[in-house]
Length: 313
Image (cartoon, rainbow, N blue to C red; front, side):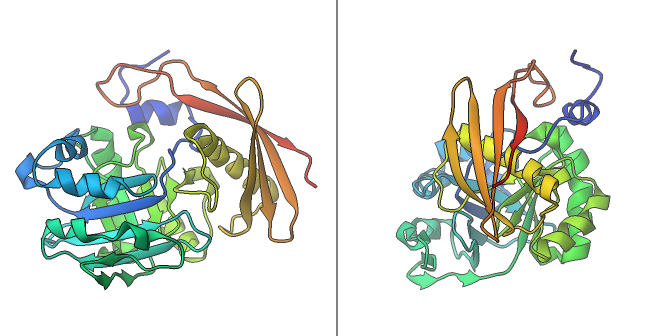
């Protein structure tokens, strides 16, 4: 039963909603620094509005031509620049690049062919500069108040620990009810239900090449695999359970090997560890009972996953 006295994030936390398997697939991430003053600031449907008309429309159409691209507008206090970041997560070695735009129209010069493995993204004929890490925390309270209520304290604590140049506020990641939610780059690791006291563990583990399964929503990619949405969500759910079962938290400790679609909404996910061992899980996905997905919106069903471990080989 839906408790309308709770916010969407409060209800999700009270129900102990599973986080793993809640992030939709994306391969290429484009992060554009912009306060969007001409669009009235960071409104609820700001990305859609910017895509529909105005100066950003042709720019976002150009970026969306990249494979499974996800564009985020970002900002941070006391910054009025036009920083632009490209994260390429669907590769065996995820990569992250940065540059400063002179004008937003420079985005039209991004060479999409240069996003391929083994190449360096090129903009205005020059190569973008590689950087080591970046964290994007959803704080857009005008999209959903939970994003600001839970996201701003996490953003502030993470910026204090990692340095303000590495941590950005973002318009929308998806999953308001899972606030605070964030993406850690270059690997594109997505977390939810974060609190400020989680910031140190997220940062320490990410810098050590590890992840936190109890806050893990999924990854921006599974390198070398072109998964549809259902398979991608199932992979995230299976990965968290397999990692916990094997106490394997290193990002490169297991890698997705195969996805086999079975009957009745079931999928068999296979992961290989560094020693070549095969770990499999059977994921059964279905739609939940209607739940709050965003404060003020009508409740609706969401995918949920049951994961059964299969004998390792």
